[in-house]
Image (cartoon, rainbow, N blue to C red):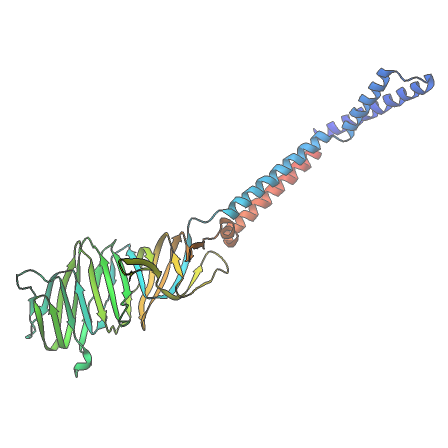
Length: 384
């Protein structure tokens, strides 16, 4: 036991002190100091010093404490230098273009009103004839048209509800969608559905004066009652919906997505050859890293926001004048701002994430307190 060891050590020290005094008196009486006596006194002195202050034991404790501090410092350094693999964000931007991939069947344009609809990539079109009956629209050789446009300007009718009302467009899971403003006409928006695996159905109603244009020719008239039309497009090729004069501003809500991007590809005429440039479509916005305190970030016009992956939900996709409003909440990775030739990462360090995560911080504090208590108890036990 520690108590018995301390008593034995005290006895040894007392015996060594008495032996050393006796050798000292003998040397003083004989006035000679034999070499073996000096060696004996020196050995006894070292042994007595060891018994009074066991330096190797103290050094062992100090070494153990130094190793513990080094391990803690290394862990903190690793946490501070490593980035989180992903982070949860809230994003609210105004943009002229967005590209996203839907992760679940999604509805677009449910009840939107417009003055003109242009569709490219059609496989079939059923449109009312002047007498109001649905009739298939075909080209001269009997094949379906590749493109068509419907114009129904409400200002040319005395009926307030006149115009073109669109039904919903059901997007299948995995469809990649781009919503972009026309460069030359801020009032025109294009929705591109890129190579859907299944056919895309679009329906709507027309009331009042209208004009239908396609490869089969043009037909116009006035429908006194709202009459529906049906279109089918896609199944392999891109589908383009050109919308002008949208009245209903909300294009979609609660859209589950597996990727999202605000990078717009622009082709510039460079004389002998065309140049393809990537530009940011963001005009303004705000982003919050919800798991990190004081992480509000204002996005300026032209700043290129990059995300390697983004999985979450578009809570709102709507028009605000000549801009598109998008609100997104989801988990992203590789978050960065690209300015010029540099890429500035916005991903928080693991240490910052742990420090701002209340539950993990409590676990970290509790672990450090438990370790400190264990060290104190161990030292107390050894000194008993």
